[in-house]
Amino acid sequence: MKLLSVAKVTFLAAALSVTAYAPNAVAFEPSNTECIAPAGAGGGWDFTCRQVGKALQDLKLIPGTMQVTNLAGGGGGVAFAEVVNKRDAENDLIVAASSATSTRLAQGAYPGNDMSQVRWLASVGADYGIIAVARDSAINTLPELLEKIKADPTSVSVAGGSAVGGWDHLKVLIAAKKFGIDDVRSVKYVAFDGGGEAVTQLLAGSVQAFTGDASEAKGFVDSGDIKVIAVLAPERLEGDFASYPTAKEQGINVIGANWRGFYAPGNMSDEAYDFWVAQIGAVYDSAEWKATMASNGLAPLDLRGADFQAFVSDSVDSIAALSKEIGLIE
Image (cartoon, rainbow, N blue to C red; front, side):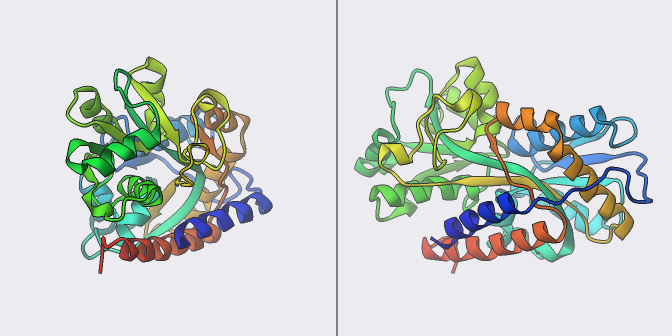
């Protein structure tokens, strides 16, 4: 599919092109820095804000500490509208983003808004998708789950931290389609504002499976509360996720990489924009961030400034095409 081929090409391009940015190389100096996580605590956007914010602080790339604000709603739409309509010229503000953001933009799910209204800063890696069940579930493999859905779609509800039609939803639909479920619209998907809430509902028995990303599931994996039945990566991840099988090795050739990065207000000054691109780049280059990536299942994806802007634009176009193909948008 176009989405996957674009992602593959981008990964290759990213691996071949690394730009060095020196911290504090521009005149702008922030004061009260803030990162908006467009979901509740425990999800992937929250992880991105808190981990990168901590690295910015620890590496002394910003003065003082970074405030993290959780602003949930609308699959990221509430935060996007807040930045565009009320905080459009702030220079101390960055916002966590991901494939879920580009998915919603591609599908016109942020009414009146589009990607051109903000400035895209940089990526900090890619988070491969996972599909999991509760630890006491009788289901142990991805084919078992999909066979159950194929036999009786009403018997299985899959929870995710993005809205209906969002990236978490798309990942499980792509897997279902690869498995031979012709009408993927029959797959029952339940949307929550963040992966943490979705896993909570899984553990409560309200749903039978979870679709999300490795980083947001890490705490639940460590605690033993969930059982990962598939990682949507081309090969097994390193580090703490090395023991979990890929969908591909189970005969379902699905790759679902969720990029993670940041955008900024559309009228942020050029000096501030250059500052944030440089500092986020310095975090990515650090040994500390490499360790964070390894322990949280993040794969390399290093895109900054104009390269990241072009990547997001391509992602929006590709996801729109995929969404039309499976009937999510006209």
